[in-house]
Length: 158
Image (cartoon, rainbow, N blue to C red; front, side, top):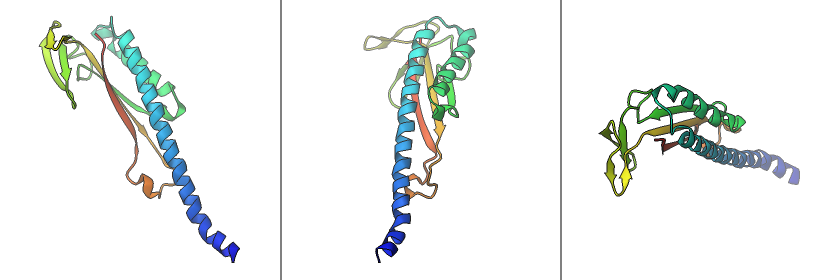
C-alpha cells in the first residue's frame, strides 16, 4: 500500500520541488540583473562625465558589455541605452530636468539651469535591460506568463 501511495505522490512532489527550484532561479536572476545594472550605472556616472556626442557609441558598448559579462545568465540580455530620453546623440546637446515616476523630461536648452529645490538640469542616460527566462517546469502555474526579468535606471552623467 505504501508503494502505491509513494508512486501516486511522487509526480506531484517532483513538480512542486521543481517549481520551488524555478522560483529560486528567477529570484537569483533578478538579483544578478539588479547588481549588473547597478555596476553599469556606476560606470556610466564615472565614464560619462567627459563624453561628448561622438563618444556615446563607445559608452553604450561598455555599458552593454558590463551587463552581459556580469553573469552567464545575463549573456542574452537585451540592453537599451538612451541619452536624454532619445536614441543616439540627437538630444545630447541639451540639458534636461527629470522628475517623477514615470519620469517627466523637461528641456532647459543648451545650458544647465535650475530645476528648483537646489537641483540643476543635466544630461542623463537611461539603461533598460530585459533578460529572458525559461523555467525548468514550463507547465508550472507559478510561472504562467512570466517570460523574463527587466529593470531600468536613469543616471545623471553630466
